[in-house]
Image 1 (cartoon, one colour):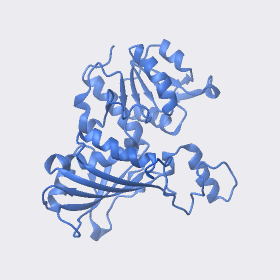
Image 2 (cartoon, rainbow, N blue to C red):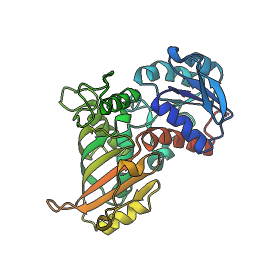
Image 3 (cartoon, rainbow, N blue to C red):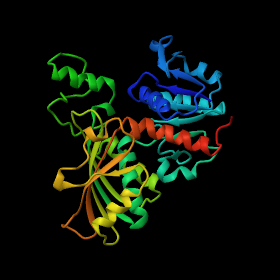
Length: 331
């Protein structure tokens, strides 16, 4: 089948191409789409060369699916045009996530809700994906009342410009700044813009998207999102209050049996997840699972995942795989 990748030259776009190849998605032709400055350049997919084309040219080629990772404005402009042509769009931007008419999907949790009529499907925020992947199986067994999350997010979440800034700073080279401050040897407690309530847009994404994906607006959630000088994955310290008491071993057992989750939790042998653990892997890693003794029915949990893979590219490709397996593409 024909697959368009919109934003094919970016960090996530190149990772989407990599994941499509790794997972042997049945691609007969790749349609790489990027900005005007990249038109005519070539990319390699499965040892074959493809020329970068415009969005309109991709629509005219009639792919069955288009995976977008080119920012919100591009998605708002072009996703409806692809959808109007009968092409299923899986969008990595924030443009459609909170639209009541658009499904916000983590396949392990809510892919069952998808239908052939869903022509634009939203991929959640990277930090949200890894958190809900770990918490939803627990929520099903013991309702979650409150979540307090602090994130430690990789510079790759910002993009190539941020990676270049960090690497330049490490070499003491002056260069373009992705952030308002140096990132190497620093921690920046701001991801995205500040809103009127003094939370950042990223923090509100985690709050609102979590409720939508888990299908429960009653969960109380607060978030602090932080950028750190790391490549390889996002980490999250999550405090979770349940309605009822639990045993820590039961929590570990539920997580170990959940799809896409790897429990790495052996403090005695210094076994716990880190960005180094998750880098270039599709799973969500969970560790440091322990009771919070300051209040009842509460645990602390540490969640790590590669934000470019499960946090973006892999989740999008998994959505495409689900649609294919259930005959939802207009082939």
